[in-house]
Picture (cartoon, helix red, strand yellow):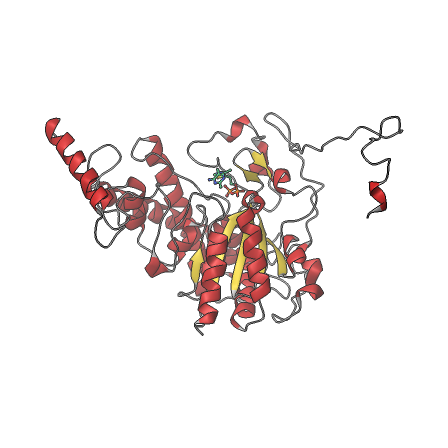
Length: 431
Ligand SMILES: Cc1ncc(C[n+]2csc(CCOP(=O)(O)OP(=O)(O)O)c2C)c(N)n1
C-alpha cells in the first residue's frame, strides 16, 4: 500500500501557502494595427550548419532540430556544406515551377472571387517547400501532401488544365466533383488524394512506406502537414510507427506560423521547435529555412538518401510564412498585423532564387519579367480551356447519377433504390 494513501490523503491543501494554479494561454506578438519587429529572431548565417552523414544516429544530430539549415546568403550566394551544387538547368527549372505556381494561385484566387469556383487556397511564400522537395525526390516516390503543396504537381509537370477542371468540378474533372476544389488526386504523378481532415496523410504515408519496404521495393514516401496539424493524434501515431520500423519516409512540417487564425504558439512553438518533435521519437530531425529552395532541396535529398539506404525516417521543419489568407474563406486582416508578411526576415523564396541565378550570370531582370508575362498568359489560356468544360453553377458537371457509382463493384439494392427515387423525383419535377 502506498504511503501516500495515509489519513491525510484527500484532505486537500487548504491553509498551505501555495499560489493558485494558472494556465498559460499563448498570445501572438502582433495583432492588427501593430508595428512588427522580428529583430529577436535567431537566424543562423547561411552555410554555418554542418552536414552530417546521411546514416548518422538521430541522437548525434539533436542540435539540428533547433538550428536552421540555410544555403542562400543575403547576397544570393550559395554557401556551405548543404549547397546542393545544382546545375543551371535545374535552378532555372525550379525558378519557373515556383513562378508558375504563384501565377496559377493568382489566377485561381481571382476565379473564386469571380464566382467560378466555391473555394481556393494559395501557397504564396511557401513555393520553395513543395518545389525544392519535388525536384529532390525521384519521380516515382510517393507524395502525401496537405492542401498547400500544389507546387509538387506543377513541378512534376502535371497539366494545369486538369488541376483547373478539378477546381471547377466540371465535366473534365477526373474526380467527378467528389472532392472539394483543390483536393487533387493524381496517382500517375505520385500524388496521393488530398484529404480535408488534417494529418490523415501522415499515417497513410508511413503505412505506404512500410508497405514499400515490406514488398522489397525501392520507392520512398514523403508527407507534408502544417505546424498546426502536428497537434493531431495522427501526427504522433505516424511518428511512432515511422520510428519503430525505421520506415523509408520523409515527414515534413510546414511551419508557416499560422493555422487559420491560430498562431504557431497554440501548436507548441513557444516551448520548442517543431523539428524537436523528432527528438522524442528518436527520429532524425532537421530544421530548414523554408524560403531557401536550395536548403529545402538539400535537406530533402539528405533525407531521401537516408530513407533509401534503410537508415530510417527524417522529420523536417520548414520555417516559412503564410503570406496570404488561409483560404478564400479567410480574412487575415482580422487577426494579424498586415506588416508581418512584408517584414518576414527570411524574404521571398522566388526573389531569393532569382537573385542567385542573376548572380551566377544565368538569368537577368528582363528574362524574369518575360517569364512572368509568359506564365500569366499560359495560365490564362489554360483557364479558358478548362472553363469550356464548365464552371460553378453552369450545370456542366458530371451527371448526378454518377454519384452512386464507383464505390461498389456491383451497386447494392439500397443504392439502386435511392438512385431510382432521385430519377423519379426529377421526372416529376419536369427536369
Ligand atoms: C481534423 C481537422 N480539424 C480541424 C480542421 C479545420 N482546419 C482546416 S485547416 C486548419 C488549420 C491548419 O493549419 P496548419 O496545420 O498550420 O496548416 P496551414 O493551413 O497553415 O498550411 C484547420 C484547423 C480540419 N480540416 N480537420
